[in-house]
Amino acid sequence: MATGLDTQRLDSVFQSRPDILEDIHKAADSPSRVQLFNKIASFVYEQIGDQPSGTSLKRRRVDIEPSRNGDAQNGTAQTTTEDVANENILLEIKDISVSIPQRKKFELCFTPKHIYGRAPGSTAPAPGIVYAWKDIEYAFYLPVPEKSQVQHNYVLFPRNSYSLSKSSTPTVEPLVFTVSSGAPKPGSIGGPNAGAASSVSDSYTTLFHWALNKCLQAAGNSVQIVAADPAKFHSKVRQPHRPKEPAVHVKAFRGSKDGYLFFLDNGILWGFKKPLLFIPLDRIAAISYTSVLQRTFNMVVEVFTGEDGDNETTEEIEFAMLDQEDYGGINESYVARHGLQDRSMADQRKAKRELAENAKGKKDGDGEGEDANGHVGEDGMTELERAQMEAEQQLQDEEDEDEEDYDPGSEGESEGSGSSSEEDDDEDDAEGDEMEDEDDELGEEEE
Image 1: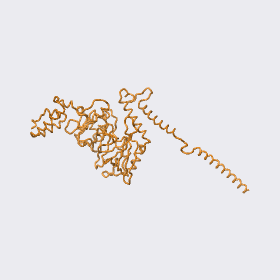
Image 2 (image 1 turned 90 degrees about the horizontal axis):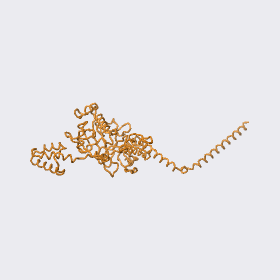
Image 3 (image 1 turned 135 degrees about the horizontal axis):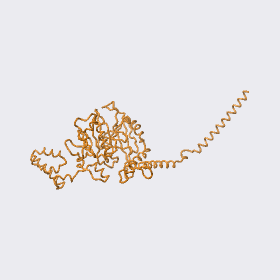
Image 4 (image 1 turned 135 degrees about the vertical axis):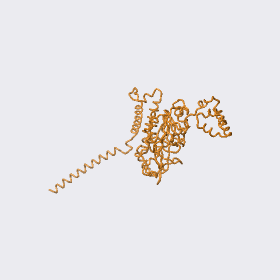
Protein backbone atom coordinates (compact mmCIF):
# COMPACT_ATOMS: atom_id res chain seq x y z
CA MET A 1 0.00 0.00 0.00
CA ALA A 2 2.97 2.27 0.16
CA THR A 3 2.41 3.17 -3.55
CA GLY A 4 -0.65 5.16 -2.51
CA LEU A 5 1.41 7.54 -0.39
CA ASP A 6 2.10 11.04 -1.64
CA THR A 7 5.83 10.37 -1.60
CA GLN A 8 6.75 13.68 -3.20
CA ARG A 9 5.03 15.68 -0.47
CA LEU A 10 6.20 13.37 2.29
CA ASP A 11 9.80 13.63 1.10
CA SER A 12 9.50 17.42 0.99
CA VAL A 13 8.09 17.65 4.51
CA PHE A 14 10.28 15.04 6.20
CA GLN A 15 13.46 15.42 4.15
CA SER A 16 15.63 15.90 7.23
CA ARG A 17 14.03 12.94 9.07
CA PRO A 18 14.56 9.80 7.00
CA ASP A 19 13.79 7.74 10.08
CA ILE A 20 10.22 9.14 10.14
CA LEU A 21 9.80 8.50 6.43
CA GLU A 22 10.90 4.91 6.89
CA ASP A 23 8.41 4.41 9.74
CA ILE A 24 5.60 5.92 7.67
CA HIS A 25 6.26 3.55 4.79
CA LYS A 26 6.32 0.58 7.18
CA ALA A 27 3.09 1.63 8.91
CA ALA A 28 1.15 2.46 5.70
CA ASP A 29 -0.31 -1.03 5.44
CA SER A 30 -3.98 -0.06 4.96
CA PRO A 31 -5.95 2.48 2.90
CA SER A 32 -7.04 4.33 6.02
CA ARG A 33 -3.47 4.79 7.20
CA VAL A 34 -2.30 5.87 3.75
CA GLN A 35 -5.04 8.48 3.71
CA LEU A 36 -4.10 9.66 7.23
CA PHE A 37 -0.41 10.02 6.41
CA ASN A 38 -1.23 11.95 3.22
CA LYS A 39 -3.48 14.32 5.18
CA ILE A 40 -0.74 14.94 7.74
CA ALA A 41 1.80 15.60 4.98
CA SER A 42 -0.59 18.02 3.23
CA PHE A 43 -1.29 19.89 6.45
CA VAL A 44 2.39 20.30 7.35
CA TYR A 45 3.19 21.28 3.78
CA GLU A 46 0.58 24.04 3.88
CA GLN A 47 1.95 25.32 7.21
CA ILE A 48 5.47 25.77 5.85
CA GLY A 49 4.29 27.33 2.63
CA ASP A 50 3.94 26.25 -0.99
CA GLN A 51 7.59 25.95 -1.94
CA PRO A 52 9.38 23.91 -4.60
CA SER A 53 9.90 20.29 -3.70
CA GLY A 54 13.16 19.56 -1.93
CA THR A 55 13.78 23.15 -0.81
CA SER A 56 11.11 23.70 1.84
CA LEU A 57 13.25 22.53 4.69
CA LYS A 58 16.23 24.45 3.43
CA ARG A 59 14.23 27.64 3.82
CA ARG A 60 12.51 26.62 7.03
CA ARG A 61 15.27 25.48 9.34
CA VAL A 62 15.19 24.52 12.99
CA ASP A 63 17.44 26.64 15.16
CA ILE A 64 19.75 24.97 17.66
CA GLU A 65 19.30 26.44 21.08
CA PRO A 66 22.94 26.43 22.28
CA SER A 67 24.23 27.88 19.05
CA ARG A 68 21.46 30.46 18.92
CA ASN A 69 22.32 31.69 22.39
CA GLY A 70 26.03 31.90 21.68
CA ASP A 71 25.59 33.55 18.31
CA ALA A 72 23.05 36.03 19.62
CA GLN A 73 25.69 37.40 21.94
CA ASN A 74 28.25 37.72 19.19
CA GLY A 75 25.82 39.08 16.63
CA THR A 76 26.56 36.33 14.08
CA ALA A 77 24.23 34.21 11.97
CA GLN A 78 22.29 31.40 13.62
CA THR A 79 23.42 27.81 13.17
CA THR A 80 20.86 25.29 12.00
CA THR A 81 20.48 21.54 12.22
CA GLU A 82 21.17 21.28 8.50
CA ASP A 83 24.41 23.25 8.92
CA VAL A 84 25.53 20.86 11.65
CA ALA A 85 24.46 17.78 9.71
CA ASN A 86 26.57 18.96 6.76
CA GLU A 87 29.72 19.26 8.88
CA ASN A 88 32.34 16.56 8.49
CA ILE A 89 32.10 13.98 11.26
CA LEU A 90 35.54 13.44 12.77
CA LEU A 91 34.57 10.74 15.26
CA GLU A 92 31.41 8.89 16.23
CA ILE A 93 30.90 6.73 19.31
CA LYS A 94 27.84 4.49 19.37
CA ASP A 95 25.59 3.18 22.12
CA ILE A 96 26.11 5.98 24.68
CA SER A 97 23.53 6.45 27.45
CA VAL A 98 22.43 10.08 27.61
CA SER A 99 20.38 11.18 30.65
CA ILE A 100 20.07 14.93 29.98
CA PRO A 101 18.48 16.51 28.00
CA GLN A 102 16.87 13.20 26.90
CA ARG A 103 17.10 9.81 28.57
CA LYS A 104 17.98 7.60 25.65
CA LYS A 105 20.88 5.87 23.93
CA PHE A 106 22.47 7.94 21.18
CA GLU A 107 25.44 7.94 18.90
CA LEU A 108 27.67 10.87 19.88
CA CYS A 109 29.18 12.63 16.88
CA PHE A 110 32.20 14.93 17.00
CA THR A 111 32.61 17.58 14.28
CA PRO A 112 35.06 20.50 14.08
CA LYS A 113 32.43 22.86 15.53
CA HIS A 114 29.91 20.71 17.41
CA ILE A 115 29.18 17.64 19.46
CA TYR A 116 25.71 16.21 18.95
CA GLY A 117 23.58 13.17 19.63
CA ARG A 118 22.11 11.13 16.81
CA ALA A 119 19.48 8.40 16.97
CA PRO A 120 20.79 4.99 15.86
CA GLY A 121 20.27 4.59 12.12
CA SER A 122 19.64 8.30 11.59
CA THR A 123 21.81 10.83 9.77
CA ALA A 124 20.42 13.98 11.37
CA PRO A 125 21.26 15.47 14.80
CA ALA A 126 18.64 14.81 17.47
CA PRO A 127 16.71 18.00 18.34
CA GLY A 128 18.04 19.70 21.47
CA ILE A 129 21.22 17.61 21.67
CA VAL A 130 23.57 19.81 19.67
CA TYR A 131 26.32 21.82 21.38
CA ALA A 132 28.93 24.12 19.89
CA TRP A 133 32.44 23.58 21.23
CA LYS A 134 32.97 27.31 21.63
CA ASP A 135 29.88 27.55 23.88
CA ILE A 136 31.03 24.96 26.45
CA GLU A 137 31.70 26.85 29.70
CA TYR A 138 32.35 23.98 32.16
CA ALA A 139 33.13 20.27 31.77
CA PHE A 140 33.05 17.64 34.52
CA TYR A 141 33.80 13.95 34.99
CA LEU A 142 32.01 12.64 38.09
CA PRO A 143 31.22 9.18 39.50
CA VAL A 144 27.60 8.07 39.42
CA PRO A 145 26.51 7.68 43.08
CA GLU A 146 25.08 4.53 44.57
CA LYS A 147 25.99 2.11 41.80
CA SER A 148 27.52 -1.27 42.49
CA GLN A 149 29.43 -1.07 39.19
CA VAL A 150 31.75 1.89 38.62
CA GLN A 151 30.20 4.40 36.24
CA HIS A 152 30.93 8.05 35.50
CA ASN A 153 28.94 10.94 34.15
CA TYR A 154 30.38 13.46 31.74
CA VAL A 155 28.67 16.82 32.27
CA LEU A 156 29.04 19.64 29.74
CA PHE A 157 27.59 23.02 30.69
CA PRO A 158 27.20 25.41 27.76
CA ARG A 159 26.58 29.09 28.38
CA ASN A 160 23.11 29.90 29.75
CA SER A 161 22.53 26.30 30.89
CA TYR A 162 22.33 27.10 34.63
CA SER A 163 20.94 30.00 36.64
CA LEU A 164 21.82 31.17 40.14
CA SER A 165 18.78 33.46 40.39
CA LYS A 166 15.32 32.20 41.23
CA SER A 167 13.80 34.76 38.87
CA SER A 168 15.52 33.46 35.74
CA THR A 169 15.35 30.13 33.91
CA PRO A 170 18.15 28.48 31.89
CA THR A 171 17.55 28.73 28.16
CA VAL A 172 19.43 25.51 27.38
CA GLU A 173 20.08 22.23 29.13
CA PRO A 174 23.50 20.72 29.82
CA LEU A 175 24.64 17.47 28.26
CA VAL A 176 24.99 14.53 30.64
CA PHE A 177 25.99 11.06 29.44
CA THR A 178 27.20 7.97 31.29
CA VAL A 179 30.09 5.63 30.57
CA SER A 180 31.23 2.44 32.22
CA SER A 181 34.73 1.72 33.46
CA GLY A 182 35.32 -0.81 30.69
CA ALA A 183 36.50 -0.45 27.12
CA PRO A 184 34.27 0.40 24.15
CA LYS A 185 32.75 -2.53 22.29
CA PRO A 186 34.35 -3.54 18.97
CA GLY A 187 32.77 -1.65 16.09
CA SER A 188 31.33 1.09 18.30
CA ILE A 189 33.87 3.72 17.16
CA GLY A 190 33.69 5.19 13.66
CA GLY A 191 34.73 8.18 11.60
CA PRO A 192 38.02 9.32 10.05
CA ASN A 193 39.68 9.57 13.47
CA ALA A 194 38.69 6.05 14.55
CA GLY A 195 42.25 4.84 13.97
CA ALA A 196 43.75 7.48 16.23
CA ALA A 197 41.01 6.87 18.80
CA SER A 198 41.82 3.16 18.96
CA SER A 199 45.15 3.94 20.61
CA VAL A 200 43.36 5.64 23.52
CA SER A 201 40.42 3.25 23.76
CA ASP A 202 41.58 1.17 26.69
CA SER A 203 38.53 2.59 28.47
CA TYR A 204 35.66 4.96 27.77
CA THR A 205 37.35 7.45 30.10
CA THR A 206 40.59 7.67 28.15
CA LEU A 207 38.66 7.81 24.87
CA PHE A 208 36.29 10.62 25.85
CA HIS A 209 38.94 12.65 27.68
CA TRP A 210 41.08 12.53 24.55
CA ALA A 211 38.23 13.33 22.16
CA LEU A 212 36.72 16.14 24.25
CA ASN A 213 40.05 17.81 24.99
CA LYS A 214 41.16 17.64 21.35
CA CYS A 215 37.95 19.16 20.03
CA LEU A 216 37.78 21.87 22.68
CA GLN A 217 41.38 22.89 22.02
CA ALA A 218 40.90 22.87 18.26
CA ALA A 219 37.89 25.19 18.68
CA GLY A 220 39.95 27.61 20.75
CA ASN A 221 38.16 26.75 24.00
CA SER A 222 40.47 26.49 27.03
CA VAL A 223 37.93 24.68 29.24
CA GLN A 224 39.44 21.76 31.16
CA ILE A 225 37.60 18.64 32.33
CA VAL A 226 37.31 18.84 36.14
CA ALA A 227 37.10 15.61 38.16
CA ALA A 228 36.31 15.04 41.81
CA ASP A 229 39.45 14.46 43.91
CA PRO A 230 38.93 12.33 47.07
CA ALA A 231 42.28 13.60 48.40
CA LYS A 232 40.80 17.11 48.60
CA PHE A 233 37.27 16.23 49.63
CA HIS A 234 35.39 13.05 50.37
CA SER A 235 32.34 12.14 52.39
CA LYS A 236 32.63 10.58 55.82
CA VAL A 237 29.51 8.52 55.16
CA ARG A 238 30.31 4.98 54.09
CA GLN A 239 29.01 3.86 50.70
CA PRO A 240 26.86 0.71 51.02
CA HIS A 241 27.50 -0.33 47.40
CA ARG A 242 31.29 0.15 47.40
CA PRO A 243 32.30 0.45 51.09
CA LYS A 244 36.06 0.43 50.43
CA GLU A 245 35.86 3.40 48.07
CA PRO A 246 35.48 6.93 49.54
CA ALA A 247 32.48 8.80 48.20
CA VAL A 248 33.16 12.22 46.68
CA HIS A 249 29.52 13.26 46.89
CA VAL A 250 27.16 14.29 49.69
CA LYS A 251 23.44 13.60 49.65
CA ALA A 252 21.37 16.78 49.74
CA PHE A 253 17.87 17.96 48.93
CA ARG A 254 17.22 21.00 46.81
CA GLY A 255 13.63 21.83 47.54
CA SER A 256 11.71 18.57 47.26
CA LYS A 257 14.24 16.94 44.93
CA ASP A 258 16.95 14.66 46.28
CA GLY A 259 20.36 14.78 44.68
CA TYR A 260 24.09 14.92 45.31
CA LEU A 261 26.54 17.73 46.01
CA PHE A 262 30.06 17.61 44.56
CA PHE A 263 32.60 19.99 46.11
CA LEU A 264 35.02 20.67 43.25
CA ASP A 265 38.08 22.84 42.68
CA ASN A 266 36.14 25.42 40.68
CA GLY A 267 32.76 25.30 42.41
CA ILE A 268 29.87 23.26 43.80
CA LEU A 269 27.74 21.05 41.54
CA TRP A 270 24.34 19.61 42.42
CA GLY A 271 22.98 16.76 40.29
CA PHE A 272 21.84 14.67 38.61
CA LYS A 273 18.18 15.64 38.41
CA LYS A 274 16.81 18.47 36.32
CA PRO A 275 17.62 21.26 36.57
CA LEU A 276 21.30 20.68 37.27
CA LEU A 277 23.02 23.48 39.14
CA PHE A 278 26.63 24.59 39.19
CA ILE A 279 27.84 27.39 41.50
CA PRO A 280 31.28 28.71 40.48
CA LEU A 281 33.58 29.63 43.37
CA ASP A 282 33.86 33.22 42.18
CA ARG A 283 30.06 33.55 42.42
CA ILE A 284 29.94 32.51 46.09
CA ALA A 285 29.69 35.33 48.63
CA ALA A 286 29.57 33.11 51.72
CA ILE A 287 28.39 29.74 53.05
CA SER A 288 26.51 29.31 56.31
CA TYR A 289 24.59 26.56 58.10
CA THR A 290 21.04 26.38 59.43
CA SER A 291 18.69 23.83 60.98
CA VAL A 292 21.59 22.06 62.66
CA LEU A 293 20.11 18.96 64.27
CA GLN A 294 21.52 15.80 65.81
CA ARG A 295 21.65 13.90 62.51
CA THR A 296 21.32 16.50 59.74
CA PHE A 297 21.95 20.14 58.88
CA ASN A 298 21.21 22.56 56.04
CA MET A 299 23.78 24.48 54.02
CA VAL A 300 22.98 27.96 52.67
CA VAL A 301 25.09 29.33 49.80
CA GLU A 302 24.87 33.08 49.26
CA VAL A 303 25.62 33.77 45.60
CA PHE A 304 26.21 36.88 43.52
CA THR A 305 23.46 37.18 40.92
CA GLY A 306 23.87 40.79 39.82
CA GLU A 307 24.27 41.71 36.17
CA ASP A 308 24.75 44.91 34.20
CA GLY A 309 27.35 46.17 36.65
CA ASP A 310 25.32 45.43 39.81
CA ASN A 311 27.75 43.01 41.41
CA GLU A 312 26.42 43.33 44.97
CA THR A 313 23.05 41.66 44.34
CA THR A 314 22.90 38.29 46.10
CA GLU A 315 20.46 35.45 46.62
CA GLU A 316 20.54 32.38 48.83
CA ILE A 317 20.43 28.77 47.67
CA GLU A 318 19.67 26.23 50.37
CA PHE A 319 20.54 22.54 50.37
CA ALA A 320 18.80 20.48 53.04
CA MET A 321 19.18 17.24 54.99
CA LEU A 322 22.97 16.89 54.77
CA ASP A 323 24.36 14.19 57.07
CA GLN A 324 26.02 15.49 60.25
CA GLU A 325 28.99 13.22 59.60
CA ASP A 326 29.88 15.40 56.61
CA TYR A 327 29.81 18.72 58.48
CA GLY A 328 33.48 18.64 59.46
CA GLY A 329 34.67 17.66 56.01
CA ILE A 330 32.59 20.33 54.27
CA ASN A 331 33.43 23.10 56.73
CA GLU A 332 37.14 22.38 57.14
CA SER A 333 38.23 20.64 53.94
CA TYR A 334 36.28 22.87 51.56
CA VAL A 335 34.63 25.98 53.02
CA ALA A 336 37.57 27.09 55.18
CA ARG A 337 40.16 26.08 52.57
CA HIS A 338 38.53 28.32 49.97
CA GLY A 339 37.68 31.14 52.41
CA LEU A 340 33.92 30.73 51.98
CA GLN A 341 32.92 30.90 55.66
CA ASP A 342 32.21 34.63 55.45
CA ARG A 343 32.33 37.49 52.94
CA SER A 344 35.87 38.58 53.83
CA MET A 345 37.33 36.85 50.76
CA ALA A 346 34.38 37.54 48.45
CA ASP A 347 35.88 40.75 47.07
CA GLN A 348 39.03 38.91 46.04
CA ARG A 349 37.02 36.18 44.28
CA LYS A 350 34.90 38.83 42.57
CA ALA A 351 37.99 40.72 41.42
CA LYS A 352 39.40 37.56 39.84
CA ARG A 353 36.11 36.91 38.05
CA GLU A 354 35.86 40.49 36.79
CA LEU A 355 39.48 40.31 35.67
CA ALA A 356 38.79 37.19 33.62
CA GLU A 357 35.58 38.64 32.18
CA ASN A 358 37.29 41.90 31.25
CA ALA A 359 40.16 40.07 29.59
CA LYS A 360 37.72 37.88 27.65
CA GLY A 361 35.71 40.93 26.63
CA LYS A 362 38.84 42.61 25.30
CA LYS A 363 39.78 39.47 23.42
CA ASP A 364 36.36 39.22 21.78
CA GLY A 365 36.10 42.95 21.01
CA ASP A 366 36.94 44.36 17.56
CA GLY A 367 40.36 45.94 17.42
CA GLU A 368 41.03 45.31 21.09
CA GLY A 369 42.02 41.65 20.99
CA GLU A 370 45.75 42.29 20.78
CA ASP A 371 46.08 43.62 24.34
CA ALA A 372 44.03 40.75 25.74
CA ASN A 373 46.25 38.28 23.94
CA GLY A 374 49.35 39.64 25.60
CA HIS A 375 50.53 42.52 23.40
CA VAL A 376 52.16 45.31 25.36
CA GLY A 377 50.48 48.74 25.49
CA GLU A 378 51.98 52.20 25.75
CA ASP A 379 52.56 51.83 29.49
CA GLY A 380 54.58 48.64 28.93
CA MET A 381 51.86 46.40 30.42
CA THR A 382 49.51 43.91 28.86
CA GLU A 383 45.76 44.37 29.26
CA LEU A 384 45.64 41.41 31.66
CA GLU A 385 48.42 42.84 33.82
CA ARG A 386 46.80 46.28 33.79
CA ALA A 387 43.42 44.87 34.86
CA GLN A 388 45.05 42.86 37.63
CA MET A 389 46.91 45.92 38.91
CA GLU A 390 43.70 47.95 38.93
CA ALA A 391 41.86 45.23 40.86
CA GLU A 392 44.67 44.99 43.44
CA GLN A 393 44.84 48.78 43.73
CA GLN A 394 41.10 48.92 44.40
CA LEU A 395 41.42 46.37 47.20
CA GLN A 396 44.38 48.28 48.65
CA ASP A 397 42.43 51.56 48.59
CA GLU A 398 39.58 49.93 50.49
CA GLU A 399 42.00 48.65 53.13
CA ASP A 400 43.58 52.11 53.44
CA GLU A 401 40.15 53.66 53.97
CA ASP A 402 39.44 51.17 56.76
CA GLU A 403 42.74 52.08 58.43
CA GLU A 404 42.00 55.81 58.20
CA ASP A 405 38.63 55.31 59.87
CA TYR A 406 40.26 53.43 62.76
CA ASP A 407 40.29 55.39 66.10
CA PRO A 408 42.86 54.03 68.55
CA GLY A 409 41.19 55.80 71.47
CA SER A 410 38.00 53.83 70.99
CA GLU A 411 39.80 50.56 71.64
CA GLY A 412 40.88 51.59 75.16
CA GLU A 413 42.81 54.54 76.61
CA SER A 414 46.29 53.96 75.26
CA GLU A 415 47.63 57.07 77.03
CA GLY A 416 46.29 55.79 80.32
CA SER A 417 47.95 52.51 79.68
CA GLY A 418 51.23 54.32 79.21
CA SER A 419 50.82 56.13 82.55
CA SER A 420 50.10 52.88 84.28
CA SER A 421 53.28 51.47 82.84
CA GLU A 422 55.32 54.39 84.19
CA GLU A 423 53.71 53.98 87.65
CA ASP A 424 54.56 50.30 87.59
CA ASP A 425 58.19 51.18 86.83
CA ASP A 426 58.25 53.62 89.78
CA GLU A 427 56.83 50.98 92.08
CA ASP A 428 59.48 48.50 90.92
CA ASP A 429 62.22 51.07 91.69
CA ALA A 430 60.77 51.71 95.13
CA GLU A 431 60.62 47.99 95.87
CA GLY A 432 64.26 47.71 94.75
CA ASP A 433 65.32 50.49 97.19
CA GLU A 434 63.47 48.79 100.04
CA MET A 435 65.25 45.53 99.27
CA GLU A 436 68.63 47.31 99.39
CA ASP A 437 67.77 48.89 102.77
CA GLU A 438 66.80 45.49 104.16
CA ASP A 439 70.11 44.00 102.94
CA ASP A 440 72.03 46.82 104.69
CA GLU A 441 70.17 46.17 107.93
CA LEU A 442 70.90 42.46 107.72
CA GLY A 443 74.56 43.22 107.16
CA GLU A 444 74.72 45.43 110.28
CA GLU A 445 73.10 42.72 112.42
CA GLU A 446 75.65 40.15 111.27
CA GLU A 447 78.43 42.45 112.25
